[in-house]
Image (cartoon, rainbow, N blue to C red; front, side):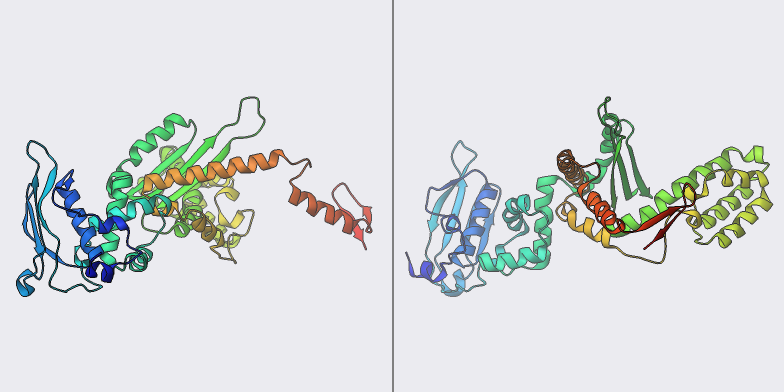
Length: 406
């Protein structure tokens, strides 16, 4: 081992980097393979080099300090006769410049080099961030690389593994067709904004066997291009689902416009009144808009009233839609799909679908082991209440009215 090898020896750097270039006569499959080997070798030995010739069939490389310090290091390679492989024809592996610093060789760490290092990492850690990669390159290889170079290298690695991001969005049209073909009854909707992907909603309908009494299960997957998963979930359940019922009402107005004796502009006004009414939280506010609708068209008012307001109006929703705002559920879901979030849109949807399927199957296996009528947690709660209520005196007044005395 030479003195410069001892100085530059770093045990965190793979041995194959030190032996990427060995001697005259060494062959490579392509010119790109030789260029990559040059990068590995220069980073392992801590020196910089320049290309005198960098052609598809010939490469001549010299030490960057050849003229300044008359350094003899050089490499020349050209194709093997009658073959496509490239061979090192001349290799002077000696340095006299003494320019071996910790930063030497790092200038040749290209995006392609970063992508080659990241591809095996992304297979097991797809959620890894460029910032984490930057730290890992420093602690593992002693390389101080720019954040932008790491980011583009990761993009290049993902593109090689999963395809181009634009292509992935384009494949959603194919995916929509396949979901409808292979999952009858399932619903998938791809919302676009001027040709740009905005939002994806998928509801898989998973039917049990014909001899089963269990109803169909629904798997819902939501994705949004511009918003995080939390915002997508919040917006969907407060706008999309909520407005589906309203949309049916609006379509009802439009289809029966002539029968109702309404003009096109009147229908538009009714739509706006209906949209405003559905988001009001109090019955008083809701009645104000219903009064306006009745004054415009009593027939339209009857349609709205007969359409079960508890299904589309906040004021009649059987629960509390206000007073407590939290993103805990979305935060938990966001953490659960941490790995999927780093994938392309199509791979992300498939990954989440498999996660949900696995979770449902694990719950099914667990439920088959239950021996009680209720699930264990509910059974425990019932038993605790029965124990506390065993000392109470109960008197019945009617079928559904009791007086309980302690």
